[in-house]
Structures are given as C-alpha cells and as structure tokens.
Amino acid sequence: MKHSVTELPFNTFLGLESATDPAQLLRLPSGPQYLNHLGTVHASAQLALAEASSGEFLLRSLGSDSGVIPVVRRLESKFRKPANGAITSTVSTPPETLDQLRADLAAKGRAIVSIAVELHDESGAHTLSATVEWFITLLNRTPG
Image (tube, rainbow, N blue to C red; front, side, top):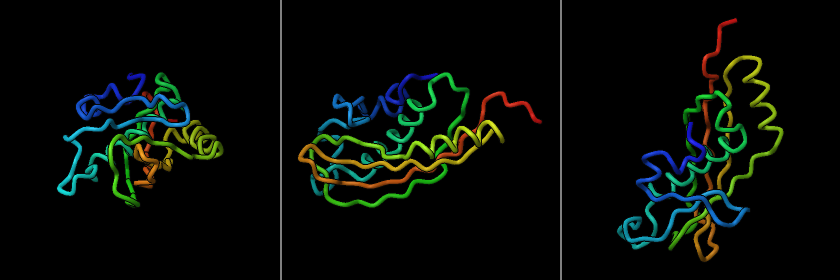
C-alpha cells in the first residue's frame, strides 16, 4: 500500500506534494497547467487537491497497513474566492469522528466517514471548503 496519496499515478501526474508546513497537509504547486480561462486555478485542480487531502488524512490516521479499502462516495464543495498560485490544504476532523470510524470498522467491517477540507492559496485566500465522504471496508474481512 502507498505511504502517501502523492504516490498514486493521478496525483503524481497532477504534481501534488506534501506540504512543508506541518499545519498543512498537501500542496498543489503553482503552474500554468492548472489555470482556467480566467487565469486562476481551475476548479477541477482544486477538487483533486481536496479529495487527495482527505485521503491523505485517512492514510495518516489509520496507517498504510491498516487493511482498509477506502472509496470516495460523495464530495461536496463550495468555492469561496478565486485561487492564485500554489494552494495548500488543511483538514479539520474531530478525533471522535475517527474513534467512531474505528469502532464501526471493528463491529461491522465497514464504515462511512466525512472529512472536512479547506484550501488556501499562497496569498492566504480561503479558496475552497469541501467535505469528502468515504466508504471504507476492511480488506479480507471474514463474514461473521
């Protein structure tokens, strides 16, 4: 299993990288390939960063050898301001959400969890708020 979602082929293609600031999770660098017709960062590039960030948060929280299979079920977002330059992500999910996730996995072998992600551009502008809902199952779960 991957140790970071930045190792996944699509995220590598996009150029996603781990953020250098410990308060942040991932970073989409600045570049003309990410721009839309207005010269700001394209909505799809921001959504990809938000989705990858929620996955990275789960990977770091559960561990790369946790034996889970996560799949995105839903992504809701609100674009707040136009994004310019590099963008970084933060995740704010309460510890009790992860406790419930672990309890559901232990009891049922599956769970649904929502991860809140915020994106900011290099000027500090809050560009996107998203909630990514994941369906998670245990690998090699024996029925019982």
